[in-house]
Image 1 (tube, helix red, strand yellow):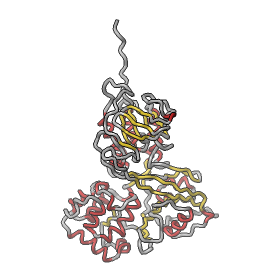
Image 2 (tube, rainbow, N blue to C red):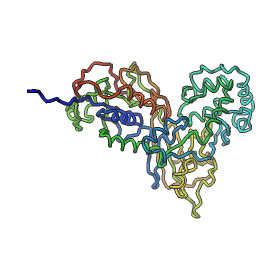
Image 3 (spheres, helix red, strand yellow):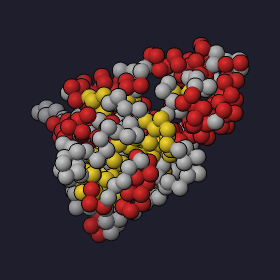
Image 4 (tube, rainbow, N blue to C red):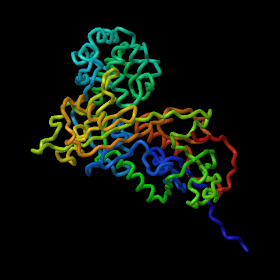
Length: 467
């Protein structure tokens, strides 16, 4: 008698981390036919994309925008049905609180603070005439000078000098990327080196890139905040039957299994897991492992993956007794970046209701400002800094809601390919890089293969332990 054919049970795909990269790779794997489970150490998904509700307003407390250069992000948002929710940046220029204590508009035509015309009046007012003349020497240098620089800082310093770098470029880069230009890889600005070589000067390269991508088209967000992306990815994963477990901390990752911290996740009872979590013994989950958690140690050399903390203070300001907005006319445009060496502790202020029209409409006369810090601020510190940067008085009674939050950005790590890793720690900064890399990793893994059984894989392979 012929034995009935038994369906092949493929190993589960285990994604460690429920940030955007983890959610994207989980979706792609599920669409390829994998059974997918996501393990998240915290109590929420999204990673650097998060929000809070203050005074009835949903406000981004992590990444608030994405770069629009190229069509990759918009194409992916179209796949998710979000393309109609893309919101363009309002036409409100940013300002700079310089080392002299003056608050001035940023140069009109610049990219990450790199000026297209170093001797323009708005550049000279920030950096001084001597530094501006040094920057002008850029046009006299061969186009190849600085083209092999590894970082934005090294490139700008070589072509335009230290004055423009520290007084203008550094505050902008630190406000956007939470790191000094000397730590920002030059490839984080796609097309910069290529345009330098084509135009034979950095200033002309910036001018060309701004022509190709006007200021308002460089960044965008989503109606309802960037967290709308996380909400939609979660809906997609639920539709695909993907399980997400929260509060599950992973101690070790291997190519074919993960080891949970004692007592973590033992009550889940997932298929392929041992039953030791509740007894305090390490629990193993077997499957095809993908790491999307920046806190894990590099799978190559065991060194800790560095993380940069950004602390935010969010203030919601009430309209006055006559209903007038407290920051009518956006006195500092979309916000203010802060140079080092001033009494202001904040690194940047974003005037959220001046920057995003959808939030301004929802606020109905109220104003939302968000300040970023290197150390956790008090409400009083945020209030003082906001007054200085905005050039207005903010009485206590005008602050109707306030909250401080912290989010982490992972440093770059090196991987050897034995365990797939996704996220900006390997892909680079920016939503486009994260999504593209996560999709590429899922394609490399491919559809389920072979007659394998969950839980039967060996324990061989290189391990990486959690910090």
